Image 1 (cartoon, one colour):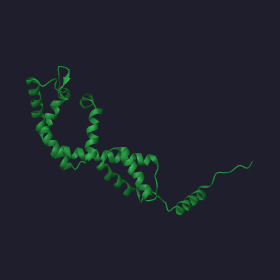
Image 2 (cartoon, one colour; image 1 turned 30 degrees about the vertical axis):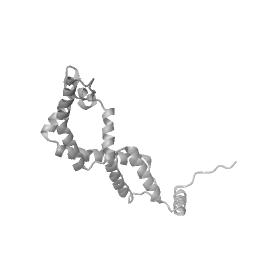
Image 3 (tube, rainbow, N blue to C red; image 1 turned 90 degrees about the vertical axis):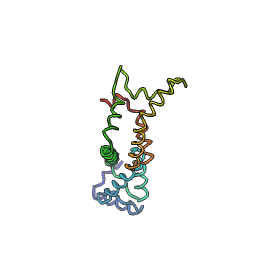
Image 4 (cartoon, helix red, strand yellow; image 1 turned 135 degrees about the horizontal axis):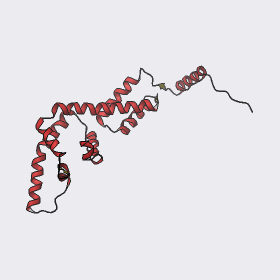
Length: 181
């Protein structure tokens, strides 16, 4: 039995280039990566879900006939653009948040009698009694300025409907404790 030795690096690279040429593929090198990152940034504006960005980048690489860079690079790039989009939104929020709205939001996470104010708003009314309806009207009055701010903020920050859904879904994931801590 003959032992097959490992190919030398020059031979292996030459064969890689030949195979790439035969299939009209290119290596995703340092000259192409900035464009790939810009594409990922544009995708993050559409949706900050990492799997969406990853799948779209992989589709782009296939369409452009580019060999995908290493997984660690892709993982770092997706994490970076998701973080960049969150920083962009946070910047808009810090510019647009008024002191009144900030106080109102902070009042939601204040605890009294071992219950957070926001927890009260999560409960549905027990019935249609006069007292329960008054509580619902009070909730609406409380949230009206927050709603108006939210509508104008979302429009001015240019947050896509997919990102709105994504960030809204995080409400179920995070508890009051994680926002207070």
